[in-house]
Structures are given as C-alpha cells and as structure tokens.
Image 1 (cartoon, rainbow, N blue to C red):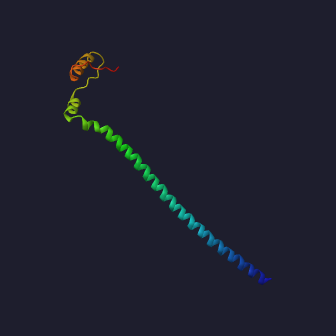
Image 2 (tube, rainbow, N blue to C red):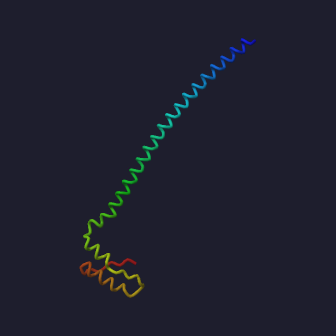
Image 3 (cartoon, helix red, strand yellow):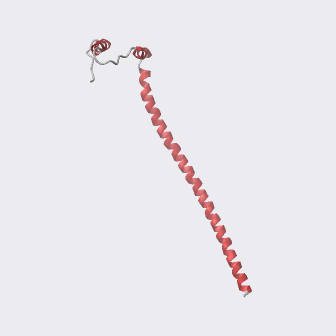
Length: 111
C-alpha cells in the first residue's frame, strides 16, 4: 500500500511540474502579446496626434496667412485707429470713412 501511495505522489508531482511549466509558457505568451499590443496602441496614438497636429498647423497657417498678405502698414493703421462702442450718432461718420477708404464706392453695411 505504501508503494502505491509513493507512486501516486510521484505521478501527481510530475503532473504538477508539467502544469507549472505550461502556465509559465502561457504567462510568457501573454506578456509578448501585451508588449505587441502596447507598441501598436502607442504607434496608433502617435499617428493620430500627428494627423491632428498637422490639421491644426494648416488652420493656423490659413488664419495667419492673412497677415502675411496684407501690408503691415495697413494692419498697424487699423490697429491704432480708435474704436467707439457707443450706440447711435457715430454710424454716419463711419460710413463716410468707409466710402473714402473704398475709393468713393458706397460702403456695405451689415446689420
């Protein structure tokens, strides 16, 4: 009887050692898959950020290209002109200035 228990213990020990080796192999495979997945997600996020930043750069260029096309003297003159935010009386003077600045053509008014 003792011999039977010893052999059963050896068999169970061998099966346990084999299960430990198999679980270590599964663990290593899962670590490799995790590393590959992390690299793919990192690469995808880099691509997305690059695309978004290039679109943002294109919009910035479109916004600031106006300042490159208009002479800086005109921009400085417009920036230094006083702005009157009062309601009423000044609308006619602004329309007259707009007619002069547009070469005598009537100014368009947006209301």
